[in-house]
Amino acid sequence: MNFARPLALVVLAVTSGAISLGGCGSSNTTGGDNLAKPKVVSKEGFKNAIRCDTSKEGNEVSYHDLSGRGRADMVQVTGYTKTKSGVAEGHVICLEIDTNHDGVLDLIRLFDDQGRLASEEADRNYDGKSDVWITYEDGLIAKAVFDDQFRGQPDEWEYFRTVCMKAQSDGACPDKRSMLKRAERDRDGDGKVDTWEFYVTDANGLPKLERIGIDTNGDGKVDQWYRDEAAAAVKAASQAPAASASAAPSSTPSSKKKEAGVKT
Ligand SMILES: [Ca+2]
Ligand SMILES: [Ca+2]
Ligand SMILES: [Ca+2]
Image 1 (cartoon, protein in one colour):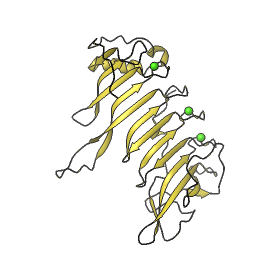
Image 2: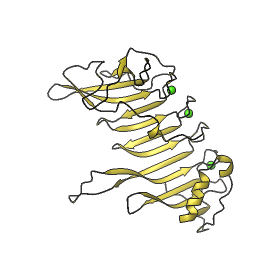
Image 3: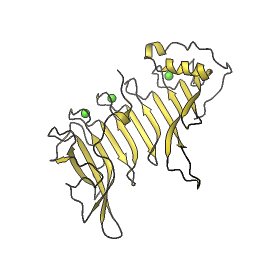
Image 4: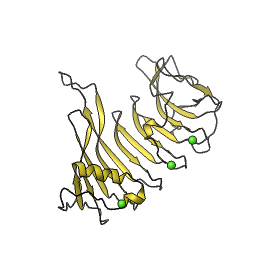
């Protein structure tokens, strides 16, 4: 079964943002002018515990019906701070969503104090266990961890670099994006990384696979390096179902030199 990456999991009707209020926040006020305003419904329990921190003084919890099914499918926690002018300004600090409407929250998003995504965690196959964990820095994805085989443990780790797509003459960069720089995989499910992929940034600012290292004897160290086309073939094999992926790569390695470690 193929699952979309988490960012495509759900189209949110509500995003994080500042909420300016004339006084103390109202629990029925859910968005500013630029935000969609889903219906707020009465408090409704979910089968699993709400994981957003609702205990901090001043935080407000509200329940929303995003899908219009007549019951809550999103929990929103809003934190408020007073500006110098005395206006209470609210920021969404946490969202939890029931994306498949089964009464179980399966996606949680935390936001930083500027309203940018800070972290994200989701249960993509709705078995009650999270299988993707993403962290952001300055609103850009920095690291993503997946349990792609749904074995109850991570089996893929992706690390990103921030790339300036087009710098201005004054050095400022209004278009920064996250690009994959390294991916690690545990293909055989023994809990240890056995495949390392390294990416460079091409002339267009996009990630380009440079080399792949494979640990063939399970000692946690790279035994074979593959580059360029050979690396692409090995990557395709590593993304095949577990049964076929366990076979040794057939591509000819570009170097048989054993490298003792992998830069992390
Ligand atoms: Ca659900
Ligand atoms: Ca799951
Ligand atoms: Ca392994």
